[in-house]
Length: 276
Image (cartoon, rainbow, N blue to C red; front, side):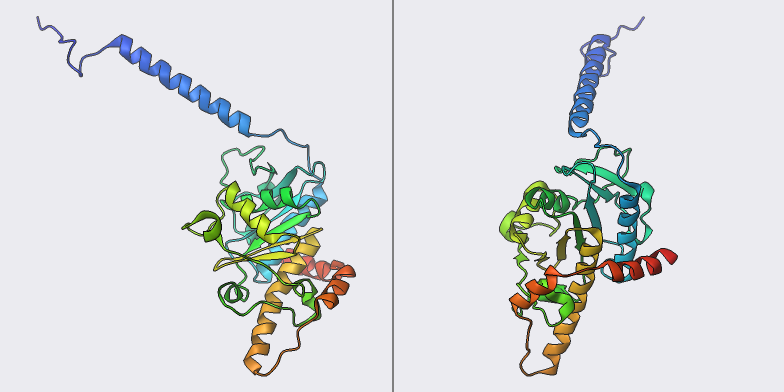
């Protein structure tokens, strides 16, 4: 008969195995409890029209070339200003109502159900925290805007449609907030720094990355995002002509924005985008 050497690491040791299993179970329970604590309670069903408009906003921005497979748009929840709505991680052109998730202002999802999230959702949560007047946020990688985020040439308003640019737009330098990163706003600290750079402006440019645009409604933030891209193109064309450029005065911009109404272009954009 062979005797089992209990000192060998290969020997079966029921007491130790049971202890390990207990430790694993306790760790799993603690992790589950921590996750449950992070998941906020829902504010209740959002207005179906608001969800429809959020889907529409995604489609419009994709149609107009402001976003491609990347970028995202959110809206503050109609039931609770401390909640916002944002799609799961998906290309904006493909977003549907089923993709829309509810988040608290810490950017924790209410009901994740295993779905992937945008890594830069903290842009939205931190801006909503800092700016109670903001009802919608867009983060994009607007192609014509990016050169103005890395150049000494300041993005300025050259057309009526860019009235919100006339007062000047700040540039967010992520290296000042987080040192060397992959340039993505992946956490709340970087999001807070971005919101601080935004201040009371309509948009903040992100060095070598894109922009975050805010507004009092989805039509407003979509319109601003589109005309930010248009404004950058127009300015580049004006610069290419040579000579002196007669930019809009900040006071002109303020007067334009005081009367700005995007309802007419929103209707047109919506019909075109949702017909595809």
